[in-house]
Length: 305
Ligand SMILES: [Zn+2]
Image 1 (cartoon, helix red, strand yellow):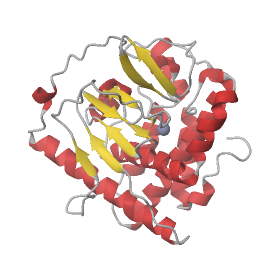
Image 2 (cartoon, rainbow, N blue to C red):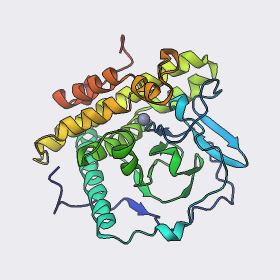
Image 3 (cartoon, rainbow, N blue to C red):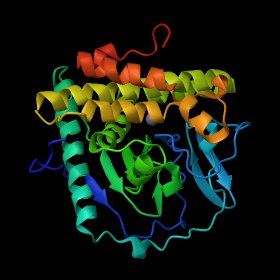
Image 4 (spheres, helix red, strand yellow):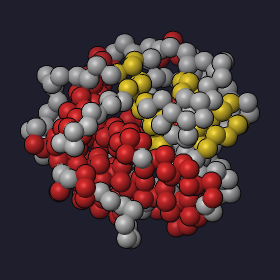
């Protein structure tokens, strides 16, 4: 991605090196976060009660979101082994990553501001919080193992940038445009929060069975993937794309598909537990957003997905 030299967002809240702390009462009841799935660690699997909720684990409130059961409640230990200050970003590589994120977020702001303006609406830009270790959010406290997520309660995207190492090494999804896709997907959840998709899901899921909620979650996640594709289309219009960028995003979408993740983690896939979509679905909806450049083409709630 040709991002160098571009303007950066002013909505980056860089809390790296700060202790997120677990004191206080971060129970904003703003609804659960919506996140990229990570297969990190050896998670418990199956039988997870709430699709998107807040679960106490050994005294820590973890974000438990629409994530794959295999990675839910990963590393259920409560202790934080990371000393936040020891991870203070210092390297040139870290600084560059920070700049990259700033540019990608700015480009999402430009796109969505345009889209909203076309409907005579203001786009309320989300804040993107960079953290290391742990972080408090309106959705509860989270740590790096949660993976990148969006919290509707405070309208913020949270990401520990070490996730990108995991994305490359563990999930086999290298490349800067894979990284950009992750951010654009989370911003997609922010769009859904504004348009009412997330609030409706939150209000309806209480009366759903687990399977129904999973199926609904898949549609929510695929729409966020489609919105990420719309952003990729915009990035193309801005001449930011390099050869291989779209392939990097599609590969990432493939690698974090529920079926692929579950097979990697446990050797087999259980479709009724899918809550982000299969690899094929995730690629297809990203591609639909990318080829059309039209958020209106991202209606994952009509018909089959
Ligand atoms: Zn998501």
